[in-house]
Image (cartoon, rainbow, N blue to C red):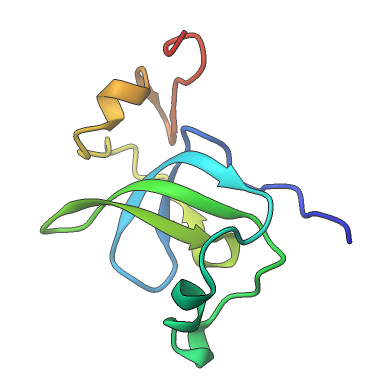
Length: 108
């Protein structure tokens, strides 16, 4: 089976297509890598395919900060230029430029 090339990158700011949250990507799975129970908990009409990249986000909505696990089909790039306020962003990333946080040498 061919694995899909990830459309988004670590450090990129994205938002969910349907739900009102956004975040910065801190890890990428080439295909679904969570529990079957988690996948089954998603209503069938909204359940994403497993054979696509999945992204770990430092996420935020109007009321809270959390981590999220989201399929590629449910993400779009956030071009607002607004920083993600999740408290762990400054621990993992450098400065924000457009929709991309600096990542890499900042951590090493």
